[in-house]
Every structure is written in C-alpha cells, then in structure tokens.
Amino acid sequence: MRTPRSVTLLACTAALAATTSACSGASTHQSADGGYRVTATSPPAQGSLDSFTWSLYAEPYTLDYALAYDYPPNTVLANVCDQLLRVTPDMQIEPGLAVKYTQPDPRTLVYTLRPGVKFHDGTTMTADDVVVSLGRHTDPETGSPWGSAFKNVTAIEKTGPLEVTIRLSKPDVLLNELLAASPGTIESAATLAKAGKDYGTPKGTVNCTGPFALDRWTQGESITLKKNADYWDRSLTPKSDQVKFTFIEDPAARANAFLSGTADGGYMVPSASLAQLRSGGKGSVLFGPNTAASNLAVLDFHGPLGDLKVRKALSMALDRKNIVKAAAGGVGFPAKAPAARGAWALAPEKTASLYDSLSEPVYDVKAAKELVQEAGATGRTITLVTSTLAPEISVVANAVQAAGRQIGLDVKLKAVAPDAYSSIFVDPNARAGLDLVITNGYDNTPDPLEFYQYLRTGDFGNYGNWTNAEYNAAFDRANAQPDPAERAELTAELQRIALRELPVIPVYEAPYSVFLGNRVTGAPTGIVQLYYPWAAKIGAAKR
Image (cartoon, rainbow, N blue to C red; front, side, top):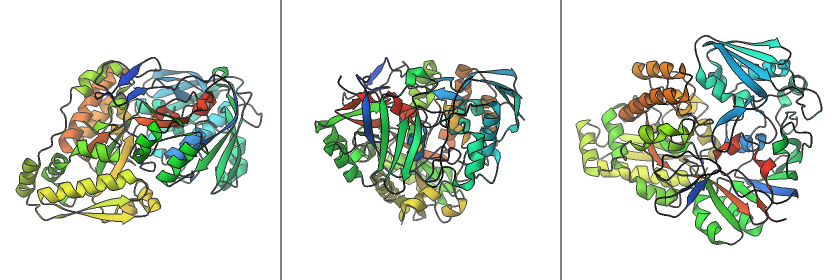
C-alpha cells in the first residue's frame, strides 16, 4: 500500500456522493446528508500577497525528493520542485517538465524535455539532469522508498540534448504515471554532486525548477520559500512573494493557530476541530478529492490473522459508521475496498460500475463471532499498534479492540512513539511482534492500480509479505495495458481478489481537507497538493 506517510487518518477519499461524474474544478459533489460538499479548488485569488503562513502538522524530516514519502515534505516540495509529468487538481495527468512522451514499443518510454527551463540558480535544465535525478532512486546508497517504482527499469539514457529514454524489462504503465510524483522530480545534477549527503537537509540546499525557491530552513521552527519570478509555467506564476511553513504537532494548538490567524491555512485539518473551525467565522474548511482510505494492514500472516476466517470476522465486527463519526467528525463513509473511490479518477466513466456497484461492508457481530469459533481462534491474541501521532489512530484502535472483544478475539493495543509508528512502514524489523497497523493508504496518481501494486509479492509496501500467485498475474496484465479504461477493468480483478482475501481490511474514507483563513484563497483542495504547485495559486481573497 502506498501508505502512511505519517498516518493522519483524516485524509481519505474523493468524490463522496454517489455520482458517476468525475471530480473537476467545474464540478461539485454534495454528501448524501447535505453536511459537506467536495470540490477540486477554492475560489480564485483576487489579488496578490506579500506573504502567507501555512501550518504543517509536523516538520519535514527531509527536503530530498528521493526520500520524501510523507505529507509534510511533499507539501513543501510541491512548490519547489517539478516532475516530468503533472497531476492536475481535477485528477488528470498532463505534461510537466516533459512536453511529451512516446512509447515506440511496450518496453521503451521516450521523454521530450521542455526547452529553456531554469533551475533556481539560473542554470538550464538538460537531459543529464534528468538522468541523474531519476537514477538516484535506483541507487541503493540513496535508500529511496521509491526504488520499487523502478524495478522494471534496465536503463535510463540521454538520447538527445532534450531527450531521455527509459528502457524496461517488461511493460510498466505505472512507472510512467509515477513520473508525475516524487519518482519524476528533477533536480540539478551539479547541485546534487556539490551538496552530497547534506542535500535536502537544513545544512544543504534544494535547487529545482518550481514556482518557489527554498529561502531558509530554521530547524524546529519554520521553512520559508521565496517567489521564483522566472517560473517557466506562466499560468502558475506565484501570487505571493513568500510562503512561511510552521510546524504544529498538537491538533488543538493547530486549530487555535487557524482561529487566531497566526496560520493563514493548512491541509489535513484536525478532525476533532472540524465543527469549531467551520463555525468560527475566521475562515473556511473546504473538502477536496482524495485517493486515500483508512485500512487495517495485516503485518503477520503466521498468527491468528493468517486465517481468512479471522480476517473476515474482524472486518464484519467493525462498526464503521460510528468510526466515521468518532474519527472523522462525521465527514466520510465506510470504505468498500482497500483503494478509495477517488483513486479511480483517471477513468471516471468506470467508477460507477467498478467501485460504486460494490456491496457495502457487512456489519454482523453474531456471524463474525461464529467465524472466529469455526477458525478455533476464540481467545487468541492480536496485537494492534497505536500511537499519539494522530487522534484518529487511537479512535480506530479502540474501535478495533472493542470489535475483537465482541467476537472472542483478544486485541491488545501496543502504543509506540510517533517516530516508531512511522518506522513500521519503512523498516521490516519494526513490525516484529505486531499483527495489525492502521494505515492511510493513498495513491499519488489517480489510477487505482498504483494502490494495488503494493500488494504484490515482495513489494516495498506489502508490509505483511502477503503472497498470491493469482493476484500477481492479474497485476502484470493490468500494468501492461496502456488504455486507462481497459486498465481499470483489469484493476477491478485485483480489487475483487483483495476483497476476497483481505490482506488489508478497509475501514473508512473521508475527503481531503484544507482550512483557508479569511484573507487568503485560491488553493486546490484535494490530495493533489502533494505534487501540484498549490502555493502558487494562493493570493488575496479580496482586491
């Protein structure tokens, strides 16, 4: 699963109403109960700003694009660095630093680069920069969590002054799509060589091509970006001269920063403060498209959860509607599948038939208890890891523990520090002795196949080392299909197997969220903010 990047569980899906239309800037989706609506953008800016302050729920652990695997670093880097391709606010993929790409055969991808693009130091981007930037993901010394995206790459070559060719061992549609995310970020090769191990740290620098340049990083306090007036994409020339990011880990303190005006805005609004912020009169809470869902990932298939009956029983015992109320402030709904509804945005015409038609998750405590008895698992212990990293984690953990108690399972909660919780997703040794973890599985692209790749045998995101030959073969078929609509049909087979076998247990979905103080507007509202240069759109709410 493309999971937890600091598992703040509020972030979860996209189009929330039962609708067959796509999410876009021109469309609006109303929830079934009328309590909220989902749109792709906020009202456009009416003027410029000298600066604005943006709240992050944690300080980025890096600004190295190859290591950026979490919301805080990507939220900053989205405005500093560009990728070869770009995901738009309406969840489509368009050209970025590559003006086009061709595929002369299924195992060859050729990218024509945009001419005249300048790095922040004024030097011009070349094919050499692209080769070096992409190649870092394949170097074990880099330790890039994105390395598995390049698993089928046999060569990355400069084939012209403004042309780069990627050669593959077998067809790989997802690699091309992921070049709209961190795997496709381009940095100056000269800067990488000069910075060495300091690159992307408070001691080093970042020299990309985005609409803002890194000005300073005061560790433990703030990160400041300055406007790049020579940005190549004139439609995204920044409306503000400066952006200051502040780090507030405590959810209540973060909400107070929004209400007091010390922070003009922020993504991933604390769910416990939604009602207060929506009624406080100091700004607006907006909900946007999301590709994420809260899931329970099985970490050990040798224990009680190795029995499918036990996994099914635990799923059936979850009171998902009450979990949504408690964990997401009532803004959301039970998840039907591991990959969220919003992950199907690349072929929106398929969403109704391939996702909306799925059955609602079953809630039947009596039948679940019988399954546990049939499995001979009554009284067995399941260890679920929890943390103070986000309040929603504790809410879901307590709900799972209560569900287990009702059906005869002894769900023990193991509390760990936030850093230790995050380590579970990158360090296999950190999973020892654990059976379950709460994840926020999301896609970087609007293609559900991206999520389902993480359940393949041996994949970086396959935390429990689940293996299924039928699933692996189905994935290869889907990943070789270039047509999005046909690929969606093939991906539905992966969804079917995942729901049948439950290597992860779907819990709930919620929209992405953003708070905008009264003086600012223009921000995209959805999860696209992880890569789209959202800060360039923010300006004054009034002329």
